[in-house]
Image 1 (cartoon, helix red, strand yellow):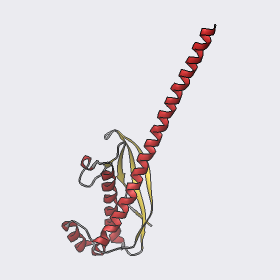
Image 2 (cartoon, helix red, strand yellow; image 1 turned 90 degrees about the vertical axis):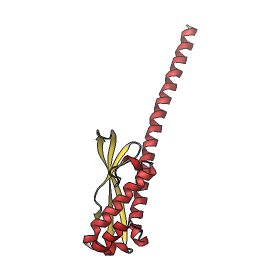
Image 3 (tube, rainbow, N blue to C red; image 1 turned 90 degrees about the horizontal axis):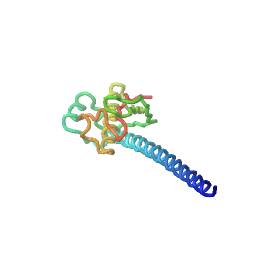
Image 4 (cartoon, helix red, strand yellow; image 1 turned 180 degrees about the horizontal axis):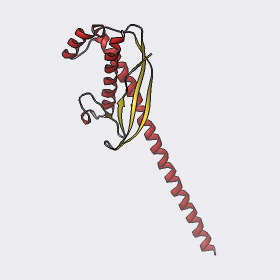
Amino acid sequence: MILNEKGSVVSIEYLLLIAFVIVGAIGVSMILNENELNMIMLSARIGAEEGMGIDGLSVYPKETFDDYLLKNPQLTYPQDIKVLKIVKTDIGFDKGYLKKRIQIRVYASSSSLKSSDKNSMGDRINYNIRKTISSTFKNENHSNHLYNPCFSNNYAITTGDVQWI
């Protein structure tokens, strides 16, 4: 009888150890996933700021600068633009990329931009968001030249049109 009691105690301790390892693994997985999402959103914020700030520095490829001078000259000098919020939306699992897909949308305001320039500025903000996310996760070569979609370790990320408020 004494041997059976000791054996059952060992079995219970073994089960508790296994349960602790499983709970720990699930916890670590959740923490890593949240960390990745936080890195995506931080990169999106940095990319949006870079996209808005480029006009102040007037750093463009020559073709882009010439195009802006012709079509949107206002975008070649500093503008008053504020990012109000950046929202991520879970789109679901993408079977093509074998990753979860999320969309990032920026809500912004500007008192100085004309309506006709907001679309171009929105495109520039979104481009810089995708480029920064790709750079953060070292996936620059896994997408097209517009970084659309861009990728993290577990997500395929797209951007929705900037909503001007």
